[in-house]
Length: 575
Image (cartoon, rainbow, N blue to C red; front, top):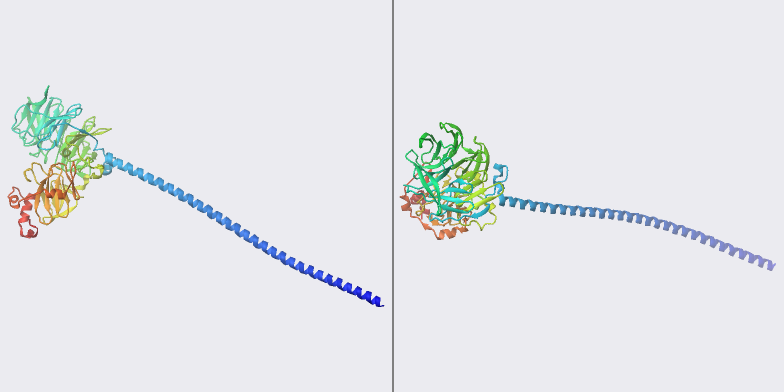
């Protein structure tokens, strides 16, 4: 029994242990399952988190990739913009170079409005011409005529020169008789007569001569002198092709005169009024004459006016000193030295072309007194530059009768002036200065005051006995002085801005131009201080005795100064 209970007790103990172990195992398994589930749950959560993180990372990577792509695109755009900017800069540089070349080579900027095309090159290839230097100064050509394919005769009021284009020589010709006055201003070769007709300005006659060549050179042989026929001061002469008519532009007489050849004599046919008559040409049965402010077309038979103009295109004529037949077209070519332009127009006065302007350097002209065109080239006499400009279809040649000029200015196109800067004789675009208790501006041959007064620049002999006159006038300034210069005089007028004193100085060069505080001359620049240090001052009492006075709104500058300096109202500025 004991053993039974003992065995039974052992069985129960064993069974208890079994159940205990089983329970423990079940609990363990349950716990393990729970832990496993937790672990799995956590793992799943972690996996989900990882997946989310991976997705986020993937999205971030995609965003980063897109940002990288965008950055790459921006970089590409920036590179393209840089390339475009570089190309634009290169294009701008090329355009600037092209523009500079156009300005330097053909001066296209100023004249394009009038021409609709670039202006011709006025600078050209410089050719030095050999000729005797005159004691009177530069050659200053004003008229010419062609006598052979490569030879011309050129007049300058003092002499007639034989200019050989190939030999590059200009030789003054002697005339074989002594004339009362020799002042050749216009020359015209008539093939019909094989004679040169010369307008002898101060002599009041027309000289007819034959060019004779000898082993020692050439000379003019007088064959006829047309005098005592009412010519006062001829500036132009022309002969009809058939030899019947001779037209004369009588400047001093303010008329156009027509003569007819009858029994080997020139008989006056008719006269017509034309202010400051200067240029003349005959084309068929029509006569074209030019002068101050106008060009007129007349009947060769009767002198009846057929047409008249006061304009070159849209701009007013200031002084058309010459008019000629354009041999390449049969129309007209001429020049206006006051505005510095050369023009071509139809015989009905419709403008065809206009170019040029007065100003420093060979990019401009300087009082071009005459222009011609044959089948080879346009020929321009740029008077105070002392040169003949020949413009063909392919090249411009500048025949220099003086010394080399303007070499110190590299880019001469910078000084190209528009001819439209003038309003009549007044330079519209020129600065104004206080002078003689007035405000003045540079004008042609004068200073224009704000009250309408014209102060006329010195004429021949007025300033220290100089024989030149002042035409294109300019004013330069510094704090103490005004320097007034002209292209047509080797002298300058000096005005002391503090004391009102007036003086003059010899520069020794023609074709000088005022530029701000300097004077630009063909050989170099001059400062106002340099000129004022050498100036001789004028005596107001002596100048007050000078002949001349008010003519309308004009009065000689020197005389006006002398009277102004003597008046009480200018005592504080009296010299």
